[in-house]
View 1 (tube, rainbow, N blue to C red):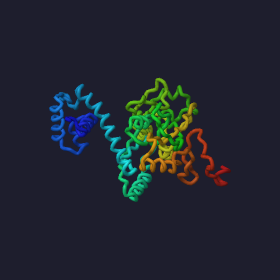
View 2 (cartoon, rainbow, N blue to C red):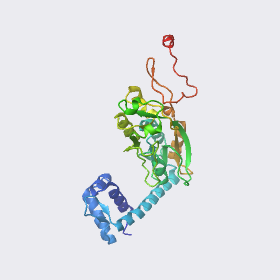
View 3 (cartoon, rainbow, N blue to C red):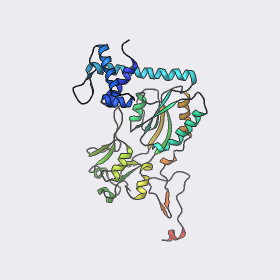
View 4 (tube, rainbow, N blue to C red):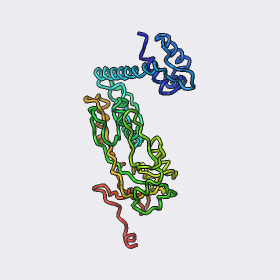
Length: 339
């Protein structure tokens, strides 16, 4: 056979990275070796795979057909590798985890550290972790496209079909916030949608590749600034470049510091339902560990309860949000009550 999986891996890297040099860097090869392998493939198949006339490596129609079908083969080969290892040891070769932007990565570091300790204590465990960042429907898209074995923090409903297994994690409260210099900072509350629509919204772009892309909180006719993730959205709103809803736990520090102002709106957004999801009906030992660990993890950081930041001062609460059940707000002293 003149076509190898290694050649398909190379074509995939060149197509994604846009050049032979970038693909060589990703695959830890020298550029001359990449050029030689592509030329050898074209000679063996007797077809031109790449159009080299432009600055960016562009597949010919024949090359595109080869890569599209080849990616199915690569996916099948990867799944076969995982299945064989699971049958032999119970442990996956690799576990791909897509993390929604609503979950800060630092919240996962303790879980990852605990997973590595668990693997160290099991001689047969040798599972690599591969993390990726997704926004809005991108988490479901990664699961549907099998780019991820597990998603953390996915919101909304899963795409139809697919046999997804879902475990609720928490509900994240959102807050409409603007910089103190923004025109809406001094607007009368609650702010009507008609007033909000006159101002640019900062939007985190959906990372879905195949599924329809989603938007949240965008009003008809509203100007938008589209950014790659929630961290950039937060920074753009702090810079006064637009308005929009933010997860309260991500905006909290800037609200406390006065870099953002929370505003009540006529139509507040419902909390975002955060979920873990996977497809495997019989999870391997690594995926099973993560499913159990996420169920036991503390997700209280997404709760809207006030947080004391200085004597006689508390962090701002999202407009209209109540304290968590069983948690009473801080009591004021007698002098404060009399003032």
